[in-house]
Image (tube, rainbow, N blue to C red; front, top):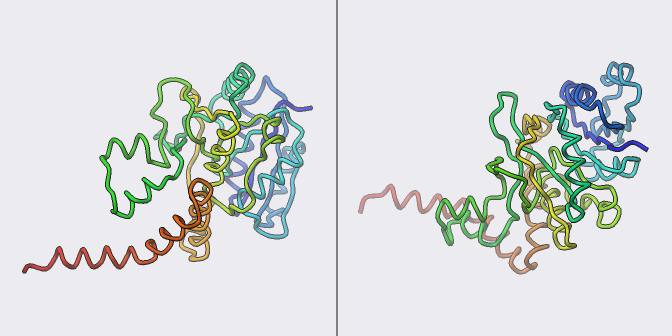
Length: 287
């Protein structure tokens, strides 16, 4: 049985997947591992060069784009490792102590379900590593209904944060771009809720684990590369994709509040652009 099962989900990012895979083979020397590649974009021919070079990769081509959550769930069902490492197709290891340090921390801390590190881009600049749960207070602030101070917002409401921590710290959720999870915890409480096509599934995961007495921890000394957005850049301007993101946001909000609150924010969100435009118009008019 391998110690770690790496799961990578591809969506039209063959070159980036190759970089991620090569980083694993380069930096993981002391621990046994397997790599499970879930292909959401039917690119087996393009992957032949990688599959021939690294014959131990277990490759699964999907008949349709399952989305991030379902594809990772399928990968876990194929995994044999004691620990699972979810690695985005546009993420990569940059330090040979990453896996050993993550494993050591998880083994020492029984109530920690998962760990993540300090995500950085190709230039070493900080990228999103963790965040707070989406809350009603944040929605009220974002819609301009009840504003808070900048410091309060970042500390207590911001759902996407770069690593600003000095020591291992329990957080609301760890970015799903690069996260190691105990397989035994997944077997008890699940991996991703399949209702999330993409985005907010990692937040939901952290929320579910916390409800069941487990922690999600960021270890700031561990740096992991994450370009950010490369696997979704082709979708970002797609209206149906934007709707899926919005649906995921409201799905999580309903999990932590109720359907009435979600209904209010859905309606308000649909008219908010018009409200902003009217306010801007009034500010520009001199009476």
